[in-house]
Length: 479
Image (cartoon, rainbow, N blue to C red; front, side, top):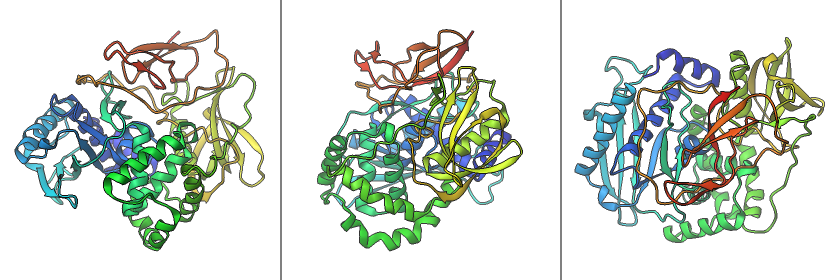
């Protein structure tokens, strides 16, 4: 188990409470334990907001629950769940050192409105910052399990983002919803229950323009899911009666999951454009990347080399969150503070890392050397992007994690797919270091002359299917 200091430093850098970061840490290990279990790993499919956070966008809101669609309804049995989940948490406790006692495991199996079985479980834990005494009880992670869902697309094996120093060398993986299905499910949830987190999720996913699926595919997924639930396709007219309640709950339901809570009005105002695009009435606006310098390479990797000073890494995390939420940043640079709209991180031909941004006061394009950043804070001032926001497509910019004490072994999936990622449009470099990336689906390694983990289509020897549109995890740098 990592030490208390790592949780506290991460919480401080991200502007979150330590218990929120600790729960994120425990969630990662629980996903690894479920994936490693022979009976659960291939049949429980991860979904929901936590799936989006842990498997697709590390700059996403922090979440608290683990939601799964079960392929086999007979898994919704108290004896089966106590045995298998008990075995999974025992594995996690042994591999990580997190306390997960069996007597803090509970399941409530009930009949849902469709007359099918569902389950809410709770897993008690103590991590690096949980109080050692029993005062206040054990922190809990909720499991939401159902077999009453239509899986429209094949499940995918996704890398679990676990930006902590005890991440296993071979990474963590989980069977999850395909990106298009996760997106469609969020729109369906917005139609059915109209909660603040659903509004936040739908708008946030739409804003990731370089990974946005086609409207026709998403519309087909949404239609099948709504038909299965017996509800109408959502529209602005159907959501309008719920607006006041949604706005009233915005802060209480979301503020603790985000470093800074964006204005609810900005998210509501984004819905007409989203529905116009989704229902085929108009194309989504296409924004061009901000102008680059000569031979600059766009950086989307989660890992920066050690040449970037530690003091600059925390500001970059803040900046990436702000970019994903279209919020301005107060950047401390060369001893003064300037308010900016952040757009893109690039590496120059000389090897320097620079942030491209727009000054919010003058509208002028500026670039800032990352190693000269002294601090950054997210403001509540929102901005309408003038260019493509390239800072929010993948996970955190962090140091490659240390080798772990144990590795994950999981059953192979029958089919693999992944969300698309845009390749950086820059020429390859013919000198300097070589960066090694491992495919998050099949494990094959690739050499890159630039820090860009997007991979070409290649054969997955384990399954016989092609890996396409996948993104690599940084392994090491060769000189």
